[in-house]
Length: 370
Length: 86
Image (cartoon, rainbow over all chains, first blue to last red; front, side, top):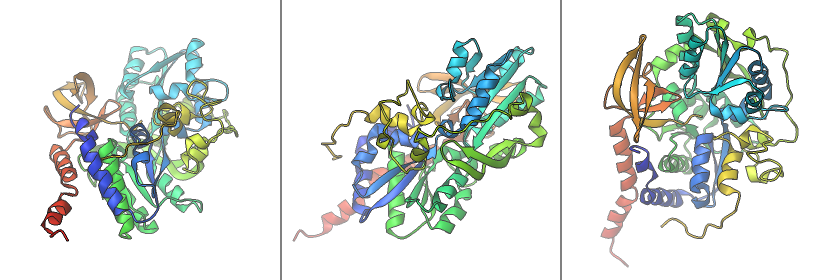
């Protein structure tokens, strides 16, 4: 596919590897924030082909993984109700709650539907005026414009049977939480490219300055990831800590201002709990008072549904880069995509799922790039 | 979930006041909302996520980046070639 295949070219990858090799003089730990980048790294074996001094730490950028158990339980409660159509992105259906997941609700007769776009859920609401249609609005800043537009359209069309179960999370506060942690080993960040397509790069300037850390806006194809790593290493070796854009074909410094305008109308910043990590101040979005009527948590009165995280699952340590997925004692035995203990094993962006899919059987790397 | 796929806009239409398009993804076509990219038109590439074009894909910039990758290390090769071999 155009603008994908070119960024997977093995010969150019070899050049980027050689540049990284030549630049590195001592150990550095880089965190790729986005789970999509984690999958690109593990699928292509990028971490195994890098010089030994460069360690990649997988970050918390998987919205499915960080949606709190409490929100999952509320989703299950709402989806089980009579006359409800519960619409969601496909990834959320296999996320384990305390005893079941959304697939189980569907199997028990619940009307749970996977949609491609939140606008599809609005169309379902319009076609079913006698039923309550709920969309599970999870995601980072990349997904928020789509969810915001669904609410705007529902409002414009006077759809009183549409609501959004909101669990939006934001990247900059998560980076700050990691940087301010006394146990953080991260020397530099690969920031999530598509989050920056929406929000721009300016939000990261104060972070880079305050913590003197390179933050390189990075794309998702193998060459994009390698260039992000290369630029990060060059900054670290030169003692710089700046925001740099390694994904200029999709990211402008100011971001998408049309999307930001609608986001400011529909969402406001709130504290948010991240599954496995805990509360991060001002790290999420909720609906503004003007759109509060579309808040599923209020419409269905599920505020009394609470849940504590299970203590056995170590997804929190994975999400904070404290352990690699295959260092967990449950990995690949008790915990598999069929019998997941945590969301990181089922999401298409989850680090545990990436390791299960591509790293379950260890293969020695005998041939390095030429 | 932040996956975004480059798609080429094939045709643009209005759906009850919202600017929509048919976009081509390597042979697969899908309906895409253009509400957030008002300056994107037929023939342009966009990054599409959850049915929404979130940004224009800057083709000149894509070519420039690939060109930069292709030239990595070439300067050293050229300069190195001029050095007399001891």
